[in-house]
Amino acid sequence: MPDPTSAEKPDVTSPYRVALVAFPGVRAFDVSVITEVWGTDRTDRGAPSFGLRRVAAEPAPIPMRGGLALHPDRTLTWLDRADLVVIPGLDDHLTPAPAPVLDALRGAHARGTTLAALCGGAFTLAQAGLLDGRRAITHWNLIDLFRTHHPHVTVVPDALFIEDDNIWTAAGTAAGIDLCLHLVRLSHGAEAAATIARSMVTAPFRTGTQAQFIEHPTPRVDRDADAMAAVREHALRRLHEPLTVADLAAHAGMSPRSFARHFTAVTGTTPLRWLLDQRIAAAQKLLERTDLPMPEIARCAGFGSEVTMRQHFASRLATSPRAYRAAFSTGSATGSDEGSSSPIAR
Image 1 (cartoon, helix red, strand yellow):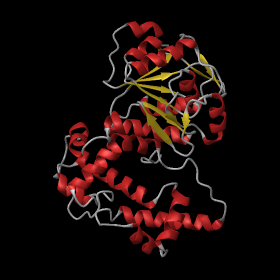
Image 2 (tube, helix red, strand yellow):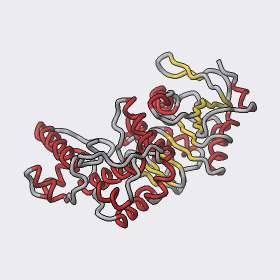
Image 3 (spheres, helix red, strand yellow):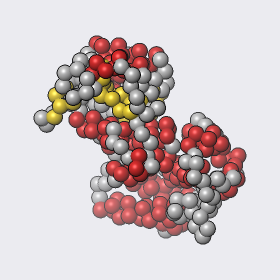
Image 4 (cartoon, helix red, strand yellow):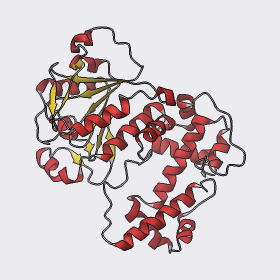
């Protein structure tokens, strides 16, 4: 077993260091998600290399449900070096975190380190007082409990994940995967997140604003889901065209109002928001993979103009297309593929 006291020794890892903070009561599923995203070597598939460390107040093994145990390889002092600190959810959501863990989390936030909590991990951040006066989310079934015990937190009831003051929180189970992939997307680009998602056989792009869950109470709704899937496929192949909600509704054989209602019921987001998310994702892919000029990328992604694309990048990603390319270009840009009508279809 690695020596946890080696936190005081030189630590040669990748430039991006991730700390998984553990203590008795953390969920094995969330530990596995964090480990799968940042602790698996996929450099042979073009994914970046990460330095994941399992950090705890004490070096002793931490028992988890199902007969599992987590063996820490660093102590809390390693948080001084971390670029990202991730807190798993809890089996019992009112489990008190050890005082040294809470102190270490407060110190990490004060240093400007990004913090992220999966599912009930939001309770740990709230215990540290880090969510008071801030927006946060947790599993939909825990919202009332969370509000009762942490009334100074502004709970967002219907989202997959959100950020406030460099603190990220996520809803339950699968939303933790969404948040982890989103954090990879922010730090290393959309292509890196897509590579990891493909390896995990999971959806590469679900935005935090989607609903936590979508009910399918009747066979009619299931039929609607099939229809909406066909419409989304149709749209993805034609992102370069000036698609509107009316266009998509016509393809589905519905009125725009009825289409918007059914689309939201099936996907958890509105047609306009979904279409914009896909255009941004297409532009990100082209910025990373190609050396196409900005006006051509804007056209291929369906923004119409570079100005419009720049406005949406600023609103959604808090950056510009040029800055995004400078940060995440793979360095193997070759221009567009001849004969391909859509950047998503490639």
